[in-house]
Length: 554
Image (cartoon, rainbow, N blue to C red):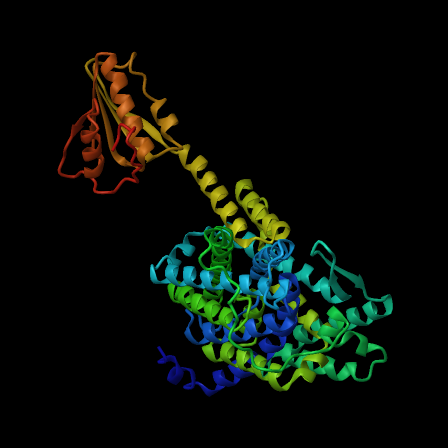
């Protein structure tokens, strides 16, 4: 389990890159962890500690060295539902005159959030142990493109939060805030452009240090001399009007108010936990796959699932809100040369030290510099090749990319976006492949006709396949050869059975040859009216089955 430690320190140059990149990543995790805490409706410390626990465990034990994990917006949005469920339960209890034993609705909300996270962690670990993580590689490239494009847009829109101040929540729980004065927005934009310029041009001069870290340090120094810049420096000052970081270590989460024996509790909370688990795994495994392409190596999806589950469980036990892979920080880590587990470990430990000993540093991090770094992430994340693909690939593929992008942006639900993309891609494939079933007449005599079929026979193509045969006008003996075809599913077997019945009613004989052994067995068990010819060179592929008591094919 710890065999990677020796390997990590064999290349001292890579160790330096991992350490410097890890420090940069830690600085970038701070504003997002705080912002996502507000999205979830919890204290900023919840998000910060989540980034520490999730980042450290996944870096040390996960399936993708160099991938950065922490608090994320996708998880925060779903976690907020668990938090609100707990709060509403507390309010209902108070209305009924029940005693909360000195606890507040927010306390119960956090306990429900943690409980949801514990269940989600167990689900993720089970998926990993069951080795189901590998199926993420079945997601089409068009869905991947839509995913990263939508995520890039979401990251960009998320930076608008830092152009506002005094974030609060109204009576309905909606976030409200005010835009900064125009002079402060002007300073912000100038520092953002400067940050982006440093990141863009510095690698042309030297690659000895991460450009993002240099940009943050230089902009920090500059803000010391700019009049009025102090008003836009502190992250918490911008978001809450206050500058306060609790530097005490988190304690074990109190779950005394959770109704463990109430069935209604599980019915309400488990769907949220399942969503947290799936959103986290989808975002993490897609990020893993993206980094695989960048590094030309292969991560271990199942191991990542187990590590994510363990990280979320531990995060919940110590009052965190969980998390998953952060594609922006992961790409920055790659860009800065971070390739080993050490980069993620250093990032998590640096964030830990900043919380415990460096609250003043967190308060002084130039928000404009961090926003500038995130905008560079957006530029590097977005698949600009999407525009080049227009006119060169099919319209259906472009529509899949667009659909996944729009669902990601407007619904903020990555699991739903990927599901929509996979379903659309499957439908596109089904329609296209259904058009490639051909039937060729190989022998034609007054007594016998032999047809040769090529292509995939399945639910989308059976209508076209069956339509190529006319039982009433055909000759007495018909042979259909499937040597160049594949019978893929239950619908295809039903079609063959129906075709045999049609020829039988017309007083004619239908013989099928070169079907797989499994096809032959299933048709025979169904008492199909077709004659099956068994040959030495019959194929051996399997058929996707649908079992039903009312079905003719069993």
